[in-house]
Length: 170
Image (cartoon, rainbow, N blue to C red; front, side, top):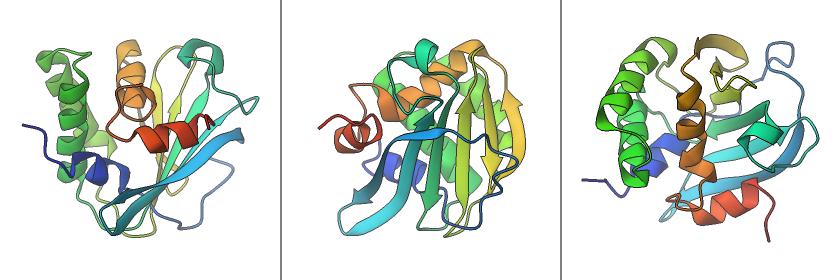
């Protein structure tokens, strides 16, 4: 069962500690927004591409999603929230979701208030992850990238207002 705070946890994993521009590519902002759950701001999000536009994953890659967290979140909470969102969207099998969750165990870390988590969707569909500007690893499954970014960018996302802000739709 999807927990109402799943997207909240998922989006609350990063914060504003100094970002190392040398490690993360310089891309142009498409849109920005904040995710709130009830009275709490969980994280700020920014979507960026080479030309500052989002058409679709293929035309817009490389595509960067940065999440700056306003709360501490454990790696396991983040992974559980990610799987909850994949289940809600229903675009991947349970076996795929579990395989990805297992791979994320070695790529993600606990985050503290102020940390920034970034995901870079590359042309080949792989996703490179960064924590506070330092690369933490790459998940090379070409179907993972779309599934991960769909959490925020698919029309059926749990956060439609944030989606509109990220892809610059009024």
